[in-house]
Each structure stands twice: as structure tokens, then as C-alpha cells.
Image (cartoon, rainbow, N blue to C red; front, top):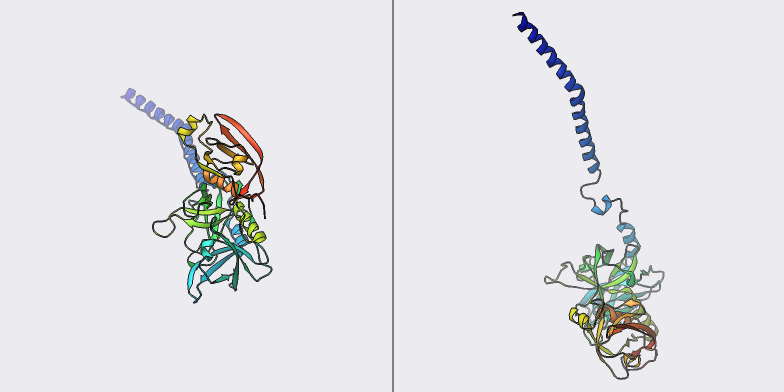
Length: 369
């Protein structure tokens, strides 16, 4: 009996000692693990649930508010009226000078007798059409006003796919509407303009653009004009994710021509062209599937005088890459007859350069006037 009591006492002491050791070591460690887990979870919850993933990496937020304030006053609402006073079309326009010059789309004003402009402060004025160019779908109009707030031009050649943009206009006559998106692509041709010499090298965005946005501004985050919103691709008639803008560099050139000459002075190379395919790139021993393939050279043209031949592949103009037909057309359209350019091209696998190539006009002249 005595041995039983001794053994029982030793068992109780051993159990108590074991429990003491467990609470001193294992119990404390378990509490720290839970605390650490809670701390990590809290650190993840610092970011708001609906914040942009771009901000999680510590990037600065894009300030759409200040950009919008900077540009909305420069965008106007345009209503085109028939001779009997009925509205035949509506759209938007962008003020480009403090004395009343406004750029818009040709298709917004082409069929009207009266052009009515509503400013950001709801003031209504009648506009005069200074000039219009269906090949680029641009028109320049003017109102009798002073001390307006013009937009600042940006360089559309510097636009990059993926950058933020804002579209400002008057869709469905809803004044001063601002939408945001990114540049989806550059140098898009959607075969919407008529004419053999039409220029389609659109900036494509996913910023929401609807009927009435035509002629409005596409701006970068600095509030600079990088394009004039012109078209959408839609099966429903409304926005479906694809909108297109005329690059601002081309807009500036057209405006300059209309103000100086009353019409656009178009220069051409005088060649038939097509895009380079993978088969052509292999056949011609090109380093990449890019460039513009010359299918024919017109006699007496700028290209002929520069020594270009059928089968050459133009890859740049004034060191600006021309990886596709729209890109080449846009670059050439920036010049007037009589201007000189440099171009690079491949011939039979070898790279060549021609400087001081004088451009001619559509009628074959080389005069600026």
C-alpha cells in the first residue's frame, strides 16, 4: 500500500512539472504565432478593397480631377442646323486659340447651313466654317469671341500604348462629359473615310465615346491634346470598347494649312504600298515583319526621283518608324509639297537611306503655294 502511495505521489509531481514546462515554453510560442498572423493580416488590409492594384506597389495616383478642370473649358458643344432650322447633326469641338478658332470633325459640320456653338459657360454663338478636309475628317470653324481658354497641343508621336487618356465631349448633347481609359493601339485603319487619299492612322482607346463626342478632345494626363475623337466601332450604335481619334500632330498640320491657305496642302510620295507580311519578310530577307512594301512607283513622282523601286520596303521617314501603311501615310501627311524628307528602306536585304527627298503634291506639283 505504501508503494502505491509513493508511486501515485511521484506521478502527480511529474504531471505537474510537465504541465509547468508546457505552459512556460509551448504556450507562449503559440500566442506569438497567433499575434504574428494577425499583424500580417492587418497589414494587407491597409489597402482599400476597391483601390487600384497599381497603387499597391506605392505608385502615385493619377489625378483625373485636375486634368478634367484643365480641359473642360476648351471643349464646346456643336449643333449643325439645316436652312429650315432643323438639327442635322451634333458633336463637339476643341478651342485652339483664344480668339475663337475651333477644331472639329468634317462630318459634324458638312451638311449644315448654320453652325451653333455652345461654350462651357452656356453662351451660344454662331460659327463660320473656315475650311474643311474630308480626307482627314477635320474642319476648322471660328466664333466671334475673345479671351477663350484654348487647349494645349501635345505630341501624338510620343503617345504610348497603355497610357492613361481622357475623352472630353458632349455625347447625346450631355455637356462637358469626361471619360477615362487607356491607349489601346496606334495607327489603326478602320476604312471609314472616303477618298483615294484619305488618311486613317487613328489612336485607338477604350475611353467611352458615344455619338456627340465626335470632334471632342482626347488628352493625356497632363491635359495636352493628343487627338480629336472621331469614330467608334459599334454594332449597337453605342460604345462597345473601341473608339478612335485623329492624332494631334496631323490635326495641327491641317489647322495650319487651312488658316494659311484656306485648304489642306497634301504631299505624297507617289507609290503604291501594302503592309509587309511574314512571307514577304522571309522572301526579302528582312530583319522583322515591319515596314511598307512598294508595289509600284509612279513615273515622275517624288519616289521615282529618289530612286525608289518596286519591291523596296520603307522602314522610316525622318527617323520615325513606318511599320505599317497607316504609319507611313500619317508621316507623309505631316508635310506640304516642296518639303524635303529623309527615308530609310530595305532593298534585297540591304538597308539604304535617301536624304533631301522633295515631296510633290497630289497634282504633281512641288510648290508650297
